[in-house]
Image 1 (cartoon, rainbow, N blue to C red):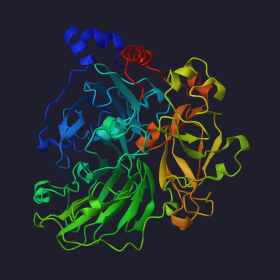
Image 2: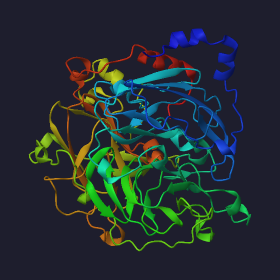
Image 3: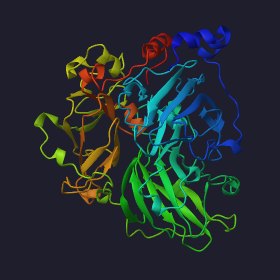
Image 4: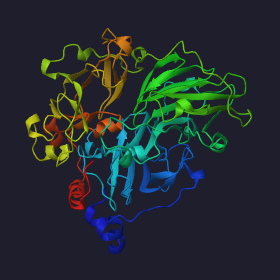
Length: 569
């Protein structure tokens, strides 16, 4: 059941509704001790449906000690962890109370990694599956997890709004997890989130005349420090996140990168770990001592607490230089504390590992049904190459392009275009950015490189996992047991090409009708148009056994948005 525009408007006091609609601010101060507190059950309920309410607003928070305006969820900075069991439905009621125009005001919520079979309208992508939700209104996202398990996340999918705090973790547990024999603990305390953080809200920080603003800090589980060069007492007053373990036990840590720009090289001083999951897909255990995690990606790692009782650094070394960090001597920058129970309440003195077994993505092997033989003989018209480029307009604003087209919000979401009769690429808006795919067919996507413009673009496909037959840096295609996931990074090949071929190729099968966006997950680049939409089996979206269930109020969101005067991005 979805909230209709008419019922919502009827239920609101007129004076309050108008006051809020025309920009009344919520300037409530958030207590620092409430930052990133997760208030959810340790395990999900067992009734088959997990029900959550997400009230969006604004407030002031200082996760790195620097106060700024943020998006709040249920009155706090740091969206709550959502959990479910395999096979559950999720009902998430989102209400938008973002009235402060320093933050992008309209919203949507995307459930990153969820296939949304027959529920494309719940995918939560502004201008692809829905119009954004304006302040004062709400929408119920109602979908089945449909057998998926693993580590996911949720975030705003309009403009660059999630960079201001609308992002949280989603975990779907499997009672019959085949990797359960490897670990003792897997709960809300073993979810580890990584995010870059800015001291200025996204609307003021980014006007498109650069390809990204520079972050000020890295937050791990919602806490971090920036390079404060003025106050010598600052490192002592701003506490870092603590990851607690008991010696002799083994932990499944679920890593999620929900940054807007940065990838991270993750290590734990004096510890190695097994990778057992990539992007919700169980993979055979692979022993490594470091891994790079790109935006949108998730890894489950199994760590044995087998070192002497002490404090160790959990390090997330960012891919870019952060503001003033080169001038700082603060050892806690970009780190959390990996603390054995019984160790003193002190920051670690440990030094970084010398990595000898870094994760090589191409060595990951899916646990279930490995292989991509279906991709060996793809029809020429379904073998699609996507070329990335960057242009600057007469106003000095940058626009990323794919095959010479830059994605811009269409006047009607792509799903509603399909429901209105669009079928062929020339039927769709925006022109050049929508690819019509046939049903039940193998599709191969090739992205040659970044043309040296940027070091790495993490691309995410909605509605599917894909088999990466050639990862960046690899010379040989693998159809036997390639890694399977939903985010892959395209690189520039490194200095002078020393990292090998920079492009990637992957395959998937069109068994999930609907318009699915494929985009760079650097949110600044998506805002500048680095996306296309795969309109998968448009006719099957409307009718047939795999047709999309369309909530009756989807049109209402567009009526309300069009009347609001708010910008589309």
